[in-house]
Amino acid sequence: MQDFAREAEPGLDETDLALAHAMQIAPRATWTELGAVLGLSAATAARRWGRLSETGQAWVTATGSPTLWRSFCNAFLDVDCVPSQRREVALALARDARTKAVLELTSGCDLHVNVITRDLSALARFALDHVSLLPGVLKVATQVGTRIYQAGDSWRLNALSRAQREQLRPGAPVTEPDAQPGRLPAADRELLLALAPDGRRTVTELAEDTGASHTATRRRLSRLVSTGAVSFRCEISQNLTGWPVTTMLRGRVPYTERKGAADQLARMPEVRQLVATSGSANILASTWLHSVDDALELEERISSALPGFEIVDHAIVLRTVKRQGWILDSLGRRAECVPIDPWFRDDGLQT
Image (cartoon, rainbow, N blue to C red; front, top):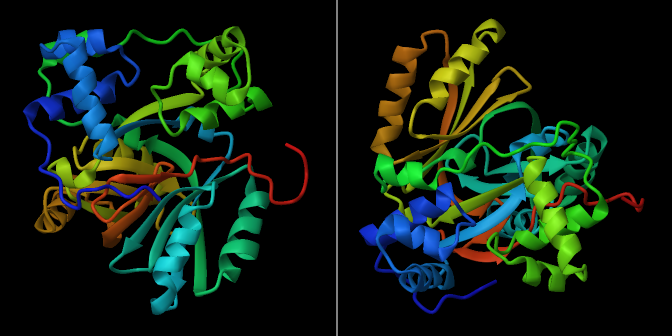
């Protein structure tokens, strides 16, 4: 795990925040394009980003997109542990390529784990035959995600003007009409995993890493983008965003009202991820808040806006161990990359 020299960081100034916001919108834009929007030279934009990246405060990664994940099994595990082994279990799960996120909670369960597997059979083997047998695990409960209404890659800082945002916003991608992003060839899957440590890697770097030709790599990268299979994300250490508190909110709403409830919840700026799930609590929301006190305010606002929405549980996250394929340190900075790999085979068969 990467060990950063400084235990405390001075934080991000307004230019850093603006650069991070710009990277959220256009993660692979050139330094010249980013500098033009921010009023910086290309060299200054690159130097500032280099400092943020080297200290683990901000980074660009690439994973499968929500469109791609629809063809897989997206699930959420609630794991209870022997108290003295909680951290070891969390790290063991974080270092598994099938986990997208691992959170330590204040209530409801010890660990909340977002998992993606090839299908239900692979999920059963992971949850029942692997996680439940890890040393220190006492109990595992599983919910299957049935619809992703909103993913974390749509969450934005508020550091750019509308004009700046419009300058960076790309046009609608040209999507191949017969694209099937869930059926990626092995070479495309290898390229997607190679992008995870740094979503800004060049075609030349990716070609060297995968052993493919420059032309083939460029063609495969273009295919990942045009089919909507890849999601490039700029992540920022949460403590530096002004939204340092994470909560997991579970709710229950009549099935006939779920779509409308999801639409209203997705418009709330605190909601980063919103998923429909199996079970009696059929909505799961991950939120970022300015303070712990805001958890109650959010509950009151949801209850007022959605009278039919019953909040079943609202747990505060003590620590985010893994987020979107990256293990984080105690200050929420990137520390160790574990690319999300739902093609992982645990049955000895070839992919």
